[in-house]
Image 1: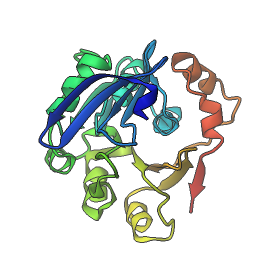
Image 2 (image 1 turned 180 degrees about the vertical axis):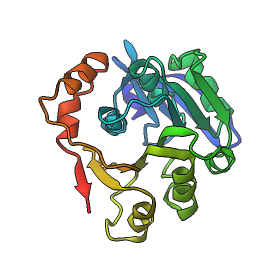
Image 3 (image 1 turned 60 degrees about the vertical axis):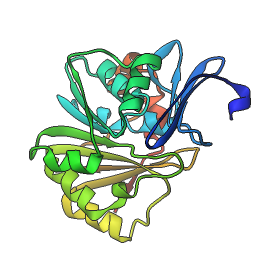
Length: 247
């Protein structure tokens, strides 16, 4: 990966390397591995590049949250997109590594906004401390250098997310593979959420959506999709067409 780009920043902390690599149009955050932790268009830093990041925003079609919790800041792509998409929304991001936050601020144009709060903590510990029904949406993207954090697949993680979400809440998870729809993970989600959806990206990431409430489907020609596309051009119609409902 590196031979096509220029390493413009390299630092280390107790958990390893953090690199920023510039390409012709894009800037990438990586933990010195084949995986890109974050990727932005250098002209439009608020615009997610990875398809799975774009897909994680799809609950915006059905919800207008006042508060979103992002677990796993990375380069801040999701936080930046949310602040841009929802002008009145407050975003609370949880990031394990202070050096990652520093890198996001210096190299990825993470907004210096009163609407953004960042907590440096393990996501599991941070979730346990959050009040009941204190957020409208949780976006979980917990990865280390080479794999998804096991915490994201644990029963207690689902329990805590369900508790922290309000009655209309959405949980969105970037999963490293497609979980078994009949397996224990989805059985656990079904105990707390009324609707489960799934999106498989071209990179084979699976985005899992869990909604506390039932909702009306949106037609591909609904003016709302055109309005969202105007505010954040990520091909909302094309992404929505690939979401499937489970159960």
